Amino acid sequence: MAKQGSVGPSRSGDQFHYQWAARQCLGLLTGADGLVAVTIEGASLDEGDASTSVGDEVIDVGLYYGSEDVVAAEAIRYMQLKHSSKHAHDPWTASGLKGTIEGFAGRFKELEASLGLNALEEKVRFVFLTNRPMAEDVLEALADLAAG
Image: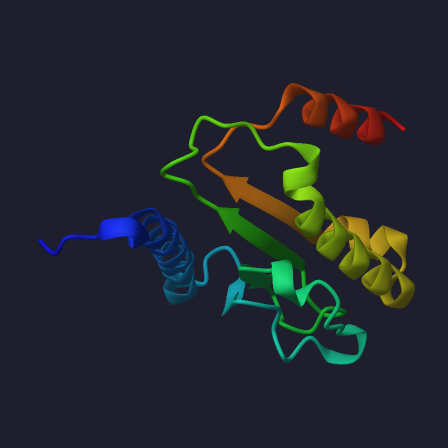
């Protein structure tokens, strides 16, 4: 086995991304749940008239169900994956999530303008997947936002 040196933790995160995305791609083989496309590092280039490049930089994996066209799709999942070997027990803080939230919020606003809020809420999910815990104050703030 080759010695990893200082890039080991970074490679561990990369390997998590590759393996997680590859597992999602297996769903394309059966089509049982309607998965029709998996994108890596950004949204599909075939999202249609409602497409936007806003927030692309925070999308590690895009999952498209029914269609890649945003209007025709049954469901879309925009995913950001964060894996840490060195900081697996360090909670995510609001400042650590800032870039992701800004990217997802910008994309949400753009899609809302073209789809409308009801359609957007029914079909699009923004997902932050991590092996690290969330800080309690972040969870409380999200709960407050969800409650209105």
